Image (cartoon, rainbow, N blue to C red; front, top):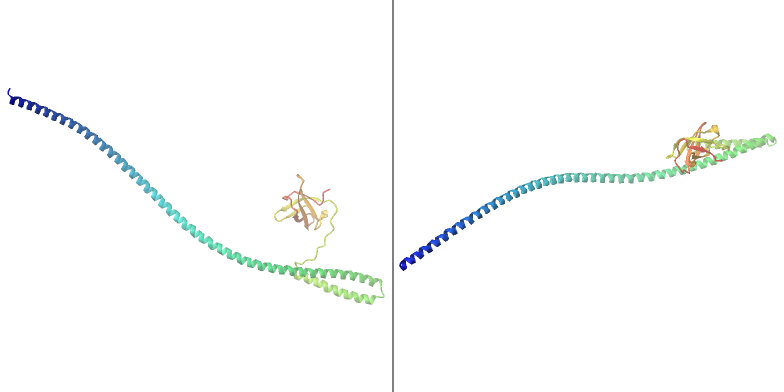
Length: 281
């Protein structure tokens, strides 16, 4: 074989090797590209799935936010209405308070006027009472004087004329005073003559409470004038079971079989069937 033939043979061999290398490289490159393509496609599908999930979650979150926003707006509207109602109520109450304060001021002025009038009436009543008491005292004195003069008239005939004149004058003055007392009693019925208080019985009297009003501080008992009860007499009210003192009852009303009065020195609640007595032995 000539040198040219050897060179051509070597070249053909080299070309064959190059072609084989190129074919092998192409085969390897084609297989790597397919794997990359499959992996990329899988990644794309995974990304699309995650995107769809993200979109779904976003839409869900948006719906929840919209619902929450609507609820908040509704709550705001309710609170706005309540605030308006409260403001109206405050304005109304403020107006009522101002009216009440004005009315209280007017009542305070009226009360001061009533107090002044009451003080004048009390002073006038006291004046009439003093005048009545003085007239009654003088009438009693003149009655005594009349009795004495009458006795002297019967026993002393020598002074008959003088005694008759003195008696006449005393009777005139007595009649004038009695007329004055009658006038005061008629025109001022609240001014009453002092009540004649009967003597209090020394005997022990016991009974029961038949009515009681602790708030008004009054009570009624089942013994009366038939047992010697008189006005002004005091009874002790006590619980017989506990032997506990409850109050003192001062009698101011007496009937045949019952009496009533005011409670004082109260140490407990007075009830029906509590015991009363005028003295403890």
